[in-house]
Length: 143
Image 1: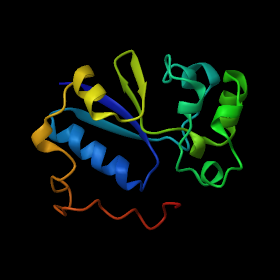
Image 2: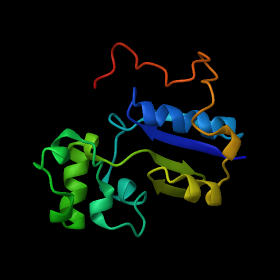
Image 3: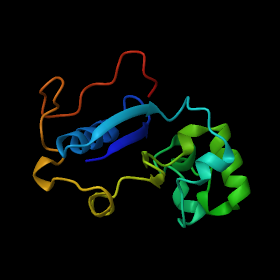
Image 4: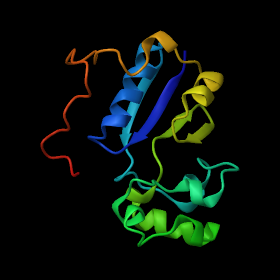
């Protein structure tokens, strides 16, 4: 099993389910705050691989949803500068296992990469609080 460094937005219900699924599949999950991580352009760029620039963006980010930010309108350099300035715009989670980095949580791709137990998917209760739905975000977490 793998040790997964999991860069997330604290309080995100989707990220909570993904972490539970990874842990239930036998992986060690080390959660990190995507929003406060000290990113550099080179380090962040490594997570995107051959993905098109528009796929680097979190389509649920308020500025993307409102149309204020059009992910397709940026060059690689412009996109990296914007993502570094506003980490909420980064597609998540970012996953790191040994020296390999990935962006997003496509269950089939994650399964092929490190393995996922399909019987342990997001419908399993949280191993911490035993609730069947995602744990509520901490009171201090920003929406």
